[in-house]
Length: 439
Ligand code: HEC
Ligand code: HEC
Ligand code: HEC
Ligand code: HEC
Image 1 (cartoon, rainbow, N blue to C red):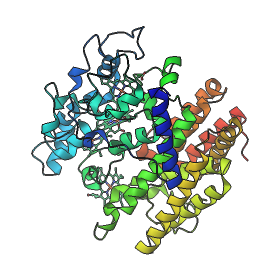
Image 2: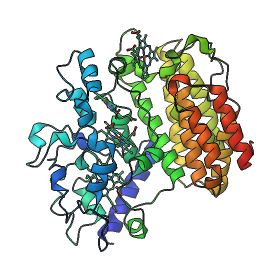
Image 3: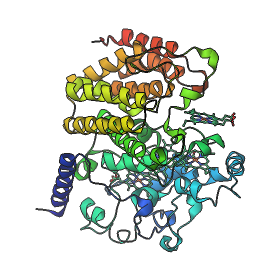
């Protein structure tokens, strides 16, 4: 057995073990990997990853550094902390400045302990290569050797960015936050923008500095946009459940951490008259404060298309979760537990790729839910718009869907003036044009 197959096999086993236990094997996030981070400059030489154009004759493009500095916002993540906007946030929080505050650097840079900063490490590089790929102490010299494989690199501490769950955990550690670094409502209140994430869309927006070509497919898995989307949602759902089960809710005083809730449940004009019962809010009273439940709600169409029992459990769990905010912690714990079971069950179903028919049913279910007004909350509409886009990408109707899809995106463009009816109508228009039949 070659090292590569062996590595895959071991990873496959770990993944299977994780599935059986309900939780995938966790990779240590780069920030906590205990390795020396050598710095972006050590990756960026022109014969390594700093070529100005793509190179032939190597597995990788070699112009990753140029893509990152020119087009990837992560390269500016530290510089953003020097702006008046950041200084205002810092001042409101009583911090001397933003660029030295751990709470800002933890997400806006590769903030590893000083002892782990190599000779070329520079904190001002922001979210650099090793913030995602892991400290290169043990692989930088060896990963270019002829005998090096993806498996041997992983064994030496390269973070598995190619695995969708590990990748989502990585992205969400900053794009949603963890118990150790969270963009709290205090930070939002000080002026920080709201965070939102969807794996497939954000992967394309980054933009990719890797080519998913034939050679890539021999070394790593190439996932379809739909598989990326659903794996991202599953990982987001689990990540959210961990936060809901942890101290941000249970050691938080009179009110749980507010940033776990749907921002627009509180922040929208009273004149909107936005409340109306929907399938998702069944059992909730008008005026109830809803959690940010978008990742559970958006898993529903894919569950309905593939696994009825998981779909029913998901819907019941979601309703119970929001209902329990009014009834107490015991009900809340029961609801998060039920949701976790539903999500684990669905994860097992979605371990097999979705068939073309199942994708079509997912699209139809999503369209129906959106057009009938289930996504009245902005976070739901925002996620639904990204999901529609991803699902259409996988059908032959991508091109013809652009004008109608643009109109859908327009309705979620401005979160402060979101009109749920306009969103539902735009999706109905899209569906009519594409002849997606609601079930
Ligand atoms: C949990 C991680 C996290 C923490 C903590 C955090 N940020 Fe952010 N911040 C982000 C992410 C992710 C974005 C990008 C959001 C997007 O565009 O989707 C962002 C965006 C911003 C922006 C807007 C950037 C732009 O391009 O317009 C500013 C300003 C900012 N952060 C400042 C701060 C400051 C100052 C602190 C410390 C008080 C801080 N952030 C703490 C993750 C975090
Ligand atoms: C925000 C996270 C992030 C940052 C920052 C980042 N990468 Fe990546 N990188 C990824 C992801 C995700 C992939 C695709 C999954 C994979 O192949 O592992 C990837 C893939 C790659 C690949 C693999 C290409 C292949 O064909 O196997 C290389 C090489 C690479 N990145 C180099 C770099 C370099 C060099 C930098 C810094 C200049 C960098 N990356 C910064 C996330 C990141
Ligand atoms: C160490 C923290 C960190 C990690 C890990 C991280 N990001 Fe980010 N990301 C940020 C910050 C901070 C910003 C905002 C930077 C700015 O505005 O200059 C950002 C911005 C972005 C943007 C631009 C958003 C916009 O509004 O234009 C995209 C897209 C993105 N990240 C995708 C990803 C993906 C995909 C991953 C996982 C592979 C990832 N990020 C991992 C911190 C992180
Ligand atoms: C439970 C209700 C509630 C939720 C949910 C909520 N907020 Fe708030 N928010 C408030 C209150 C109350 C204030 C204080 C208003 C004031 O000082 O005038 C506030 C203040 C703010 C401010 C400061 C506004 C200003 O005038 O400077 C921002 C920005 C903000 N919230 C963003 C968010 C974001 C982003 C989210 C979601 C992650 C969110 N809020 C979720 C109730 C909420």
